[in-house]
Amino acid sequence: MWLKIEPQEPILVGEVRADSQFLVGQTYIPGRVLRGAWAEWLAQQGLEDTRILETVGRVRLGNFFPAAEMAGFRYALPLPMSAMSCKKAGGFRSEPLPERHGVVDTLLPHLAYHLLEQKGARFSVPFSLICTKCRDRLEAYGGFYAVYDLYGTERFVLFRPRFHAQTKVALSRHRRASAEGMLYTASALSPYVPAPDREGAEARLVFVGRVDAEDYEALKEALGKVALGALHTRGYGKVALKDAEVDLPPLRERLEAFNKTLKALWQDLRRLAANGQDLPNEPPAGVYFSVDLLAPGVFRERSLPTLVPSLTLGGQTLRPIFWMTRPDMASGWSNAWGLPKPTHLAARMGSVYVYCWDGPKEELLPLLQALEKEGIGGRRDEGFGECLVCHPFHQEVEER
Ligand SMILES: [Zn+2]
Image (cartoon, rainbow, N blue to C red):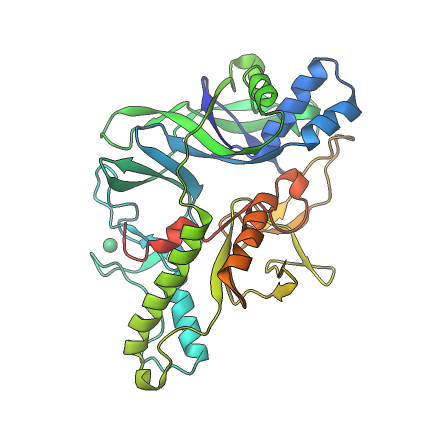
């Protein structure tokens, strides 16, 4: 089930690092913020702590990603770490002026190159990508993007937040601050953003995310009555909640497209290898898939923290064969004690891991469906490890 959050006022959602005077304003709404707001509302209704934990524990709330509200909305996601754009004029080609040279995903070309090298391919040049418009270097391109269907053509838009004036904010224990009454500097998000279709126009900011809850209606009602994030007493954080229509390509389609594109790229790159004739016509057998983090992931391997998780699926232990990740810190707060939890090493949102499954696709599909539902790694009850299999952006191997 997909839900849409429409801020009616500026909204300030952020995280306080233990050693900082800054509330790092986030441009998305973590699922745990919604869970916290719901818990607080239940407490206001006089519910006991154990009942609150029970009620809130039954619901799975994913992260909510920002987008400009516009007709034809299909979905909003973080760009995977493999997305790149031109150093000189980065951005999607279909955005309003100034001209941008397009965003491209490099995971599948990288993977094909890597697999070919393992099979002994000899390339005369190292793997590198340049802008097809100006020949300048490509660099990593992050952030959130949304896809719209505009009269039958797909339109890609990067989320460009607009910030409300910077302000000093005091946070309560329930809002995850380390010291009651301490002042933090923060900027709230405006409920309006630049319209993606017309230069100079405005559109409403919305956040779209996944909810899996039996008490869906109760949750929706409660969140419509509380303010999200900080500064509520000063007219911040009021939201409206609506069912969202999201049109993300189904898992089967994403998995099939991933393998088809990998095969096509393998064949393209094989022709460029000096010894192309001696190389097989297809990648090594197996079903290839990526796991893309939609939230930071907390992983351990033989009781040590790691950024590169193995997967156990249907009795097979799969090691990633290719990955792109960067470190992050997983902090958090204990609901029961109002104290910071130990900080763990985490893999950043947008991290990508590729695995290869030895077996029929039909056996793999339900396992991957469960993985998307349950998430990956530790501290999932706090919203870590939310993931998507075969992120649709991996299909964009030509500039968008
Ligand atoms: Zn360029």
